[in-house]
Length: 293
Image 1 (cartoon, rainbow, N blue to C red):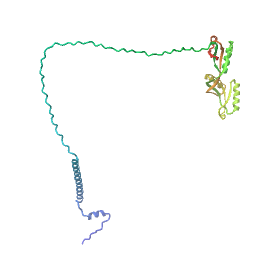
Image 2: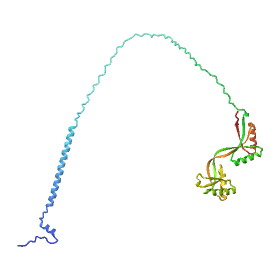
Image 3: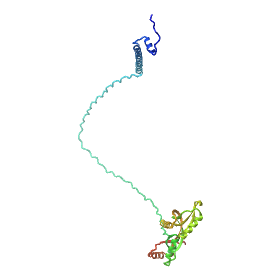
Image 4: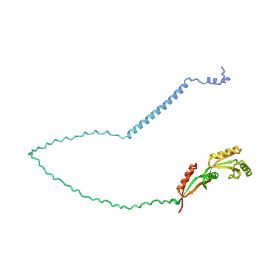
């Protein structure tokens, strides 16, 4: 007998198994056809089920919907026959002449209406009393030359004194915008005193002041002006002397002096004096003061 080697040869185990297995070339085709038939059966069953459900819903909807009978046709309306005209018999009347009825005139009597005018009481009007005017001898007149600071007031008094007049000065407080000229701040009071002496030596008026907080130092003020131009002139003079200065603005109650001429007992006397001063180039304002009884 011929011996058969059942052991697979080396390095060819897969090929050996394939040779021993029976070969069926239609197996794969049969499997594919079975799967395809199964899928078609499922699709057919699903379609029949959906068709059954749809027909059932339509039947239920038709049963639940009420049946509406068609409307009856409208019956024709019989129109009534027109009435037959009735001919009235004609009566022959004899011709007669028209009768004339006299019309009497109508007289209408209008009632007499008497209207009484309302009585108006007229009260007598009290005469207006004329305003009481003080006699001229109870008034006092003066000529105001202006309001000045102390230095300008003294100059104005000396100017008017040349004409033989004696002006009067009255101190007043005026709130004005002021321009203050300060020299640079120093650390202690002794240095401030030395600076003040040096400024006075150079011909400047000085006023030693300290800030609200003494630790901030001391300053020397060299002028207070209501005219910024005058403050600027002083600032330039200080810088020309080698000082470091500045201008500060503040609202101050400044002491000023009113310079007046008079009093004059009458208006004519005050006016005459005003004309004389105006002819010499001096402008004044005429003031009147009411004297108390």
